[in-house]
Each structure stands twice: as structure tokens, then as C-alpha cells.
Length: 357
Image (cartoon, rainbow, N blue to C red):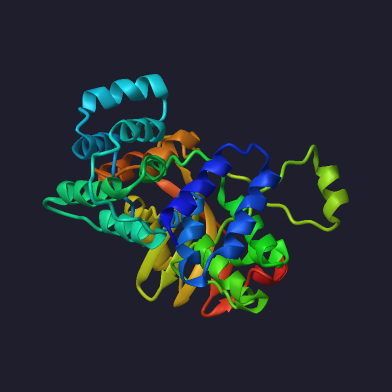
């Protein structure tokens, strides 16, 4: 598929305010998309290249992007920044610069969705010595062959700011509509696979393929979030019999274990294992199952009083990249486990609360 086709759909979506109309646009586009490109295309529609839990990331910041645009167009980074200050969006700035520089490449190659996605992968996998130069090289190759409109959406994707008003939930609804499958079935598959591209590809095959998607250790399950209610009486009236637990002012942690390997994911499904060695140690000691996924809440503790500390203190630990051992001493955690979603090959999410307990 030509990348220009995706860019045209991006443009339609950007200037379509209605969510229902956006769903229709995406649904029709997915119907026309061949199975071999559907997985990648569905990811790109959400503005993502990799799912949140994947440790790969493009690793291109604004400064490196401006240098690349400058390299391709000859416009100095300082001028790019001035244009950005006026325009407010690097995608629009890139499009305008390239329109002025129509003749900047004599022999362009037409970009395909597959080529763009593959190039993003090469950018993400550029590590170590000389990695910045490699990232510039791969991105410059894309921009050199892109039309102004294509370049607009490529640079937005690189910075994670697609700005077309499309989130994963909207693509989920469009998948259900495109392939005439109950949105609840699509939603469940998405909760388990946690990869909108895999879900889209399975949905094109049919309902049975979606129902075959199962929980896998080290692929975090999308969390169920609480709904607000005016009071307890309202909850009991709505649900009938109910169980209650203490709500801690902590951070959600989803702990995955397989053999000796343990990974921890945040509420936003990011891998936070490196920042939380104390929870890894606790899990390794306390969990006897060989394979398990458990849900819990971790709370920062004031060592002087034994009382919970503010939520902001927890985030200091989660975001820490350096001096993790020092931060662990200053802000110790206590972790409370409240659910088991998978254990030794058995999914438990469809069991009722008492059975899981």
C-alpha cells in the first residue's frame, strides 16, 4: 500500500471532528486494506509504531528531528525553530518547508506503508556508538522520498504527536464495524493481546480468530478501571451482591513471572521493572507459581511514621533511571496484591471474585 493513501486518510481524520464519522472513515479504510499490511497500518492509525509495553522506542527528540529536516531541506535548525514558534506544529512546518523546496530531490521513490514502518523499526534499533547518525540517516531517507503531506505525518509520528484525534478505542470500534464483529469480542481480544494491529489482522480472518487470542506472560493485560458512583447505596443497587476492598493511594503494578524472569508493568502498561528492584525481589521470594500474572498496588511509605506518602513520591521511583538504589532507600515501597489473572497456564479473568480469591 502506498503511504500517500494513509496520509490522505490521516488528513481526512484530522479535519473530521465527529468520532462517529472518524470511525466510518477508518472502518472503510480497513475493509480495503490487505491482510499483509493490516497489522502495521492499524498501529500507525493510532500514531504508534510499537505497543506501550514494547521496550523499543524511536528515540528521536525534537533537536535530532530539526537537524534531520535541516539536512534534507537545507533550512537551518534556527529557522525551523522560528517557524515552529509561529506555526505551533512541526508537521505543518515540515510540510510548508518541503512545498517551498519541491525540487530538493530529483529521483524520489514512492513510499509504501511497509517501507515507512520498516524504517521506523531501523530507527528504533539504532543503538550504541554512532546511533544518532544512523537515526538521522534512516529518517532523512524517508523525508527525502516523502511528499510534503507525507512528511507532515511522518515527523508527527516520530515525535508521538499525530494530532488526528484517533485513539486505540476508536480504532477498536472501527475494526468491529469493518469486519461486522461484536465490539465486545474485539475489545476483549484487545485487552488480552494489547496490540491493535494483531487484533485487526485477526478480525479480518473472523470472530473465531479473535476468540483464540489468549493471555501471554510478559504481554500486559489492559487494566479494568473503576467507575465513579455517587455513594455505596447506588453501587449496591446497581450490582446487588458486592465485595469491597481498601483503596490505596498508590500506583498500579502488574507483575508477570515465568520461571526466574519477572517483569513489572505500570497502569499505562510501560515496563518499569528496572526502577522497582525491591518489588522484583519481593515477587521472586513470595510467588511460588512458575507462570503467573498478578495485579496489585504499590504504596510509598514514610519510614519515620510508617504511613503512606504522597502519590507524587511514588512517581519519583517509577520514573527513575539513575541512582535507583539510593532512591529505593529514600522512598521504600509496600505492595498489596489484589488479583490473579493467570496462573500456570490457566486464565482466571472469567472466574468470579470468590473463585479467584
